[in-house]
Structures are given as structure tokens and as C-alpha cells.
Image (cartoon, rainbow, N blue to C red; front, side, top):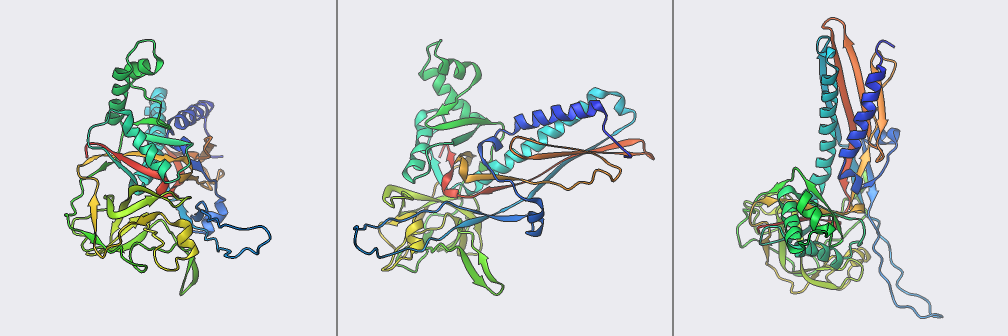
Length: 427
């Protein structure tokens, strides 16, 4: 082989992998789906991942033939190996005399790739999370987190493996509450909050502090925007479907989104959170109204009167709702209206704190087929989550430089926006 790694470099790579794995804070708290490399190449790096079934029950009497067998609609979402991240660098034969410098560059590369993965997960939750909790004051109270617990419980989100990632200022605000409200030195919860700004488990959520967080700008859409929720054929009666028929035959349908028509989309922006008058969230399993307005997110603005939102508005209204509408109903339209008012929730620009249930977010580790006999030294290793790092080295005799590159390939998907949400303060 023309190039090979020294023993010192191999040891350094092992140390780098260990540090990289430690830095993957968010990826440790989402589900993992390992893909087949050949299959993903043939499928253009996209695979459809199933969402949970939601079934309906009927009353039956033993000895009496059961009527009303239902069709079950399997919903799925596309997941893509969409992130191909590389950190390249080069070192001259003079720079290589300083072995410490080489280690610093490797640490920097590891830190950046780990950050890319964490940011991709955070962005997926922050942009599509449809459970919106808006707080009028700054962070600093148990009740703030308890509202995230409540909105998940009311809508039937599993009560285990829940996580909450807060911006540094909001996390420290909550830690300050713990340090002051429970102050009695010798109390572990109070001591850790005071000494390390550590919060830990709160209201069923394992909390984490982010040194970076997305910002959601204040909604600029004016008051008076309305949407039709009256009747069976309106915007509030989306019908979930597993597939649709096109010129090319049957294709899968992504049921996380719905394009709706509103009175105006002037100044509306992707990311905006809103409620609709008299459209209440229901428990996804019992279908009982929670008494709380359902929250939605704008995914894209498509025209002067059309925008794509998540989740779709599945009201199952009308004389004969379909089995799919009954199974996946997520709202109760208390008072249908031709022009129901839309109210935006992000009234002030704020940091986006994200919360989720583990099964809602998924990371798909990818793999490069890098030849090891093409004159370039190659090392590869895999983290506990299945994320692969590939390190390559090439020496250029003309310039007396060595080129290094550290690569990783992965995908992130928010399989269920109704199991992820955002917490906004100062609204």
C-alpha cells in the first residue's frame, strides 16, 4: 500500500472516536435504524419508515357475527441519507514535526462532525415539532416543563423516553429556580443546581443544556387570517392514505403534511406556530377532546393563499368518515366555521427549546464504500449508535504535504411531528 497509518495515528484515531461518541449527546436519545448500503444506493438513499398504527375498537357480543371490519391504513414517512459531512485538512512536512498540532486538528474535526449530527437532530425537531408550549415569562419554573408533559399526556404520547433540550439561558433559568426554591445545602438536587447549573430529570423529561439553539422569529402574519373548517370537504377533514395513484402507478404518501388554503399568507413564514379557533386536540387513542386548542406549524408558504402545515387537520367530520379518518383523527372541530380565525403563538422572537419522545426522531447511519487499496490510507470505525467515521490520508510527493479527511454519512427523520414539540419563553 502506498500510504499507511502509523501506530501513533491509529491510537489517535481511537481516542478521536471515543471523544466523538461522547459528544453525540442528542443522537444517544433518538431511535436508530441501520440501513443496507446496496439497497439504499438502489433507492436513491431513501427508505420509507412506518409510523405507529392507531386502531379503533367496536362493541361485540359473543355468539353474534361481528359486523364492521375495518381497513387498516399503514402510514409511512420518507427517510433519506441526506447528510454527507467532511472535515478536510492538510499538513506540510514541517508542520508534522509538531505531533501535538496533529492531535488538535483531529479533535477539532471530531468536534465539528459531532456538532453537525446534533444540529441535524435539533433542526428536525425544531422545524417540525407540532406540540407548541408558549410561556409568557422567562424560564425558571417547574410548571413550564410540566406543561410539556401535559400536552404530551393529553394527546397520548408514550410517557417514557422523553427528552428536553434547552438553550443555555433557559436551562440556567430553570437551574436557578431549583437552586433557590429548594435551597438547603446537603440536598443533592439543590447543590447540583447551585454548583453546576445541573437540572436532570424534571416532570418526566431528561433535560439537556445546548450551547447552541435555533431562534424562531416573531410571526409577522397579520391578524384576521382565517381558514374554512365548516363541513366534510373542508381543510379540517384531511384523509390519511398509504399510497396514491399517479401516472407512474402507486406511490407512497407522506401524511405528516397538508397543504391548506387560508384567506392570506402575507408575511406568514415557515416555522410559525398557530392555533385555529374551536379546533381542539384529541387524545390520539381515545379520540376524546382535550379541551386545548390543537397547535400547528407552518412548513412552507406556497402561494398568496396556500401554505403547507404539520400535522394535517384530521377532523373526521361528515356523515360517513373513512376508516383512516377515524383511526388517525387528531382534532375535534367544536364549532365549524367558514372563516375560523388563526392565532399565531410565536409573538416574540425566542430561542427554540425542543422536546420529544425517543421513537419520534430517528437517525439513519450510512456507510461509504471507500477502497483500501487505491493508494490512500483508510481507517474506519463505528460508534455505539452505528454512526461510521472514515479517516483517509494521502501524501503528495510534489508539495510534501499530507491531506487528511474525516467523513461521516447519516440521515435524520422526524417520523411523527405530533410526538415532538417546542417550548418558547417570553411570549
